[in-house]
Length: 291
Image (cartoon, rainbow, N blue to C red; front, side, top):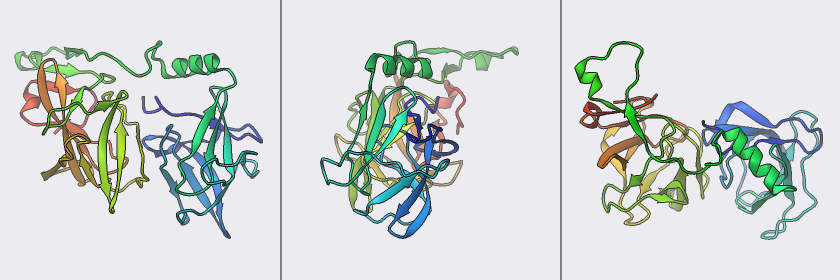
């Protein structure tokens, strides 16, 4: 389910897949590339999530520098004939598995990019087929079902409800109570190193895809996460992630008519999340690492 919003790309020269399923960025398989910045050579793993600007790189990529990208298979430079309409730097072009091409700017910090589909209907059908969403790619109604088990359940277990993986979580700010859902994503404000931006999280339970308007380094804490309505911090001061020890933040989600505290780790790439101990008396999250 992590690959739900990932665009799979191939080298436009040799046609081989650029996907790296071992190294994930934004919790999705990444594009594995060779990179040159000036006289330095290195390796890069670029996010495959549309409108995300995150990456991993083993050499420095200074702001405004021009990078050259090469295929890890045939060593050919991957470049487009087009120039960036924003900063005039060369564009970099990949072929997409679903049909069409994606162009991104080669200047570090420039966010110009676009997708071109040769046959939009064909590409859209392939996207639906890959995601197995049967024509519903961005929204699923929230459902809660009784916990299923092959073993006999005692009376206490029978009272516990299960929120199934893939359930659409309607999210709210715990302070101003306004919805955090925008364009079918959970939108949060990020304040990090005096920079402000937004991170969008998948609203589907146990789908860990994310994208952001500013660069967020994998394996590092994101920073202060806030409600984009009231600008109040969502960070929890007295608890840490039970998986990695990082800071956590809290939003509210709906289950039936009840609002639940839903906590998540603030470290990029960590998948820990859970309900409060009080809510665990009544409800479970399927396949989640609970408190």
